[in-house]
Every structure is written in structure tokens, then in C-alpha cells.
Image (cartoon, rainbow, N blue to C red; front, top):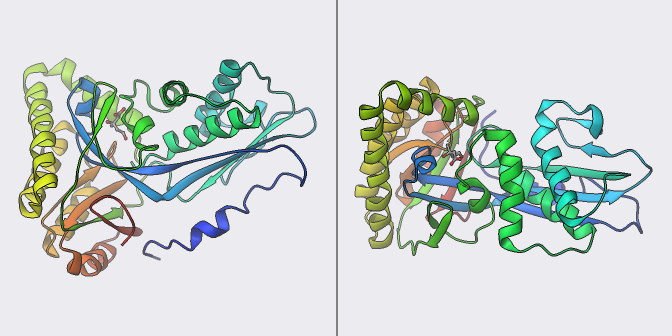
Amino acid sequence: MPSSFDVTSLASLDTSALPRIGRAVGRGSAHAKLILFGEHVVVYGKPAVALPLRAMRMRATAWREGTEPRFESDHYTGPLATAPEIVEAPRKAIEETLRAIGGDLEGLTVAVRGNIPLGRGLGSSAAAAGAIVDAVSRLHNVTLSGGEHFALVQLAEQVAHGKPSGLDALATTIPSPIRFQNASAVPVPVALDACFVIADTGVHGSTRQAVDDVRTSLERDNDSTMATIDALGELSDSAIADLETNEPRSLGARMSQAHELLSKLGVSHPALDGLVAAATGAGAFGAKLTGGGLGGCIVAVVERGNASAVASALQSAGAIQTWSVTSTGTPL
Ligand code: MEV
């Protein structure tokens, strides 16, 4: 059943993992991210633009109980030692954080819960890792620097994605929109008077697979793949100018152009193409896939007054969920 963004669902998340009263507890949380431009090409040193989606979060709680290390989540609850592959990246975040701060696994329970859908290009893996790093370090009363936190999330992201650019690790912690390139970020002063509608195809996309596919096409056909990567990189910087000078039509045209180029790179999916067409058919200025692709979500730039009509059209076209946010990522 399609549904729109519901902030009240956050309240129930806080009660999800409750260690016994009186125990020392470490807590952490990180939010989702929305890549507006530059996914994939950021891996090759091109610029990207991303927004925080602060109402969608992963929250982690860490405490010690008994002797056996345990993990709790909606997907697996049980001993860490026998956790399935889906827990590999969170396990790396736990182990590397303990190594960095000089702690051990004995009796450690880490619980992670949140409302960021997994495998949809919204940063669930980086947000889960970031929340875990904070929860485990705070349980030990250790305050990590931003750089230490980033490095630990990147180690977990290497398990999830292979060779991450660092965009997700950073974009899941930032308070406002950024331009990101070569592991460093600057704020983007967004003045856009329009909003973004995000829609989930319901198809689980593999970022690792998509990143591998782009690398393979670069190896096979370097000149034309590099030309597509260059064109996408240039779109990121032109889009920043649109965001800063309030040019929603021009931004939309660039988003649709970026979707075409990302399709050429081989990271789209028929369900993504269908939602992009539905968004523009319903009056969006433009739309594109967001994140790793091969499934996951699209983002459309839309006149504020038209957001609910575009969201309805996306739901009719098969989106399992939509979220409407301002041009800086706050829920509408
Ligand atoms: C995934 O959210 C973003 C990609 O560009 C990968 C990365 O930056 O590491 C596809």
C-alpha cells in the first residue's frame, strides 16, 4: 500500500531496543541522504551534490549484558558470531570502532533500528554504520573526531560497497546540502523555491553491483564511458548554480539529462525509468534516479503546489512509498 512520509513513525523507533534500566548505554544516530547529482561519477573524482534527509534515520544502541556479543535489528537478532551476510557491514563497524578505542566484544549488544529503507540509494548502510560507531564509542565514553568517525564508517562501507567515494559516509552526518569531491565537502547555499519528491520503486538495488558494472564498462569502452562520466560531472556544477539562483526549470532539465546519462552508464532499471516518466508526465520539472541505481529511488523536482499531485501519480505508477521534502531536505 503506497504511503506518504509520516514523521510520527519516528516516535516509535526510540522504544525499539531497550537495554535493562540502569545499565550504561551508548546511543548514536545518523540520517538518510539524497544524492541530487554526481552518483557514480563521484567515485572517479567528479563533483556530487547531496542533501540530508534528517527525518529518516538509523538509530543504534549499545550496552553490555552477559558474555556473548549480540546484534539486534529488524533483519536479524541473535549472536554476532553467527550473523548472516546482511550484518557483515554493521559487524565491521562494531569491530573497527572497538579496535580504534581499545574496547572488546565481550558481552556487547548492539541494536540498530530505523526508517531508512535498505538498498534504495538513500544511505541506509552508511547511516547504520555511523549510528553504530557513535553508540559503541559513546558506551566507552570516547568522543571521536569527525575524521575518525568518517574513517570508521568508510571501513564498514568498504564491506557494503567495495570502494566507496565517501559521499554516503559524509552525507549521512551533514546538517545541510553539500558539494562533495575527492573526500571533501563545501556547503551549497540552496535558494531553490521548489521541492523534491522522492519515490521508491520497491526494487532492491545493489550499489556494489552498479559500481562494478560502471568499472567494467570503463575497462571495456574507456573513451565513451569517460565522456559520459565527464558530462555527468559537469552537470553537478551547473546544477549547483541552478540551486543557488533558484532556477527549477533548468535544474529539472539537468536532472532528466542526468537520468539519460546514468541509463547510458547502465545503472538504471525499467522501474526507475517508469517512475521518471510518471513524474515528468505529472508536471515535475525533471527527474532522475538517485543513489546507486539498479532499483531503489527516483527524485523529481517539483513546484511546491504540485508535490501531492506528483506523489499520487508516482504511487499510481507503482511507487511503494513517496517522500516530499523542501529544497534543503526537510519534510514538507
Ligand atoms: C551510492 O550512494 C553512491 C555511489 O556514487 C557510490 C559511492 O559514491 O561510493 C554510487
